Structures are given as structure tokens and as C-alpha cells.
Image (cartoon, rainbow, N blue to C red):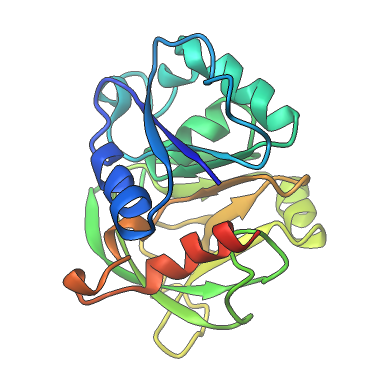
Length: 231
């Protein structure tokens, strides 16, 4: 599996992703410029486009709203519609929702404050290419860093996500309990990450790339990348 990491004006996690995917995991990884109008021709639907975290276009209007119209995004949408893997993290999750590749939206945190902290995530399904190396109910510790991370969708969409096994992660406490106190941003149903119905587009607010090597004393995030590589 090859990876392409998109760089937007204001991205700040692109090099983190390049390091984890290339240096830690040993995968072929290239950086893609937001003004490119196409994905490299040698990318197949077995490969993955990463939409990384940061503050694309300074989060003007709202997070992800301008990046969604970058020239490369039409190619990303076409790639996803052909079955290629697309994975958005934090600002990348916001961009994928704005682009219509994932349902729902990311709103301002309920406390109206930027939050940077470690949180616990409960694995809600292992029937996905992002979680197949983990057990349902397993708890990961992963960092968050966002001001607009409150997942929102209408009741019909939330029901559809649950019915189709599209909810990947929920915020929880250390004992895997889903509680209001464990929800850092007010997300609906404590949702921290989802996939599309086809199962090839993923989005999550926490940053697994910041918890993927021994040097950081946390390798929980690597389980997510290992799952993706396992397919």
C-alpha cells in the first residue's frame, strides 16, 4: 500500500504522517500539493490518500470549508468513489465531511475552547479496514487537538451509522464506559470516528500519528495504521 499525504496551506500534521508512514512503518509515502489537479497515476484503489490535521486555510469560514474546494479534492472524491482508501484525521475529517465523503459535520467544541489532551477511545467495530487488528471494546489512548471536533448529525444519520456498523470509535473512560464526562467536545453519542457505507473512507478527530512509536511512550495509534495495512 502506497500513501499520499495532501499538503494544504495551514496543514501542520503532514510531516508527522510522512514520518510515521514512511520511517516508522516503512511504506512508500509521497506528499501531494493541494493545487495538483490529479492523484499520481501509479496510485491504485489498493493505496491510500491521507488528509492530515492542521488548520487548512486558517480555518476561515469554518474548518475544512475552503480546503474542500482545493483543486486536488475532486480527484480525491473520484478516487474514493472508485473504491480507493481515503483517511482524514482531525482537520482531514472536517474536510471529508465538507466534501460529502463522510456524513455529518464537525462543530465548535461544546466548551467553545481549543482542547489538547490525551483521550480514551473505545473500539466499536473490528469489521473495518481501520480497526481489524483490534477487539471490540478495546480502549486506546490517543491525543486530540482541536477546536471544532464536536461530531454532529441528524437522528436519521446517526441511526444509519449505527445500523450499518459505520461508527469506529467512541470517546470513553479508562474502563471503556461511554459517559458524558469522557466526551471531550460534546460529540453526538460520543462519536470520535466513522467510516462511509462502502468502507473505504475513514475519518477521526484524534491523532493516531502522534501515538505510533515507542519514542513517544504510546503505540496505540500504530494499531490503526497496522489495521489499514492488513486490509
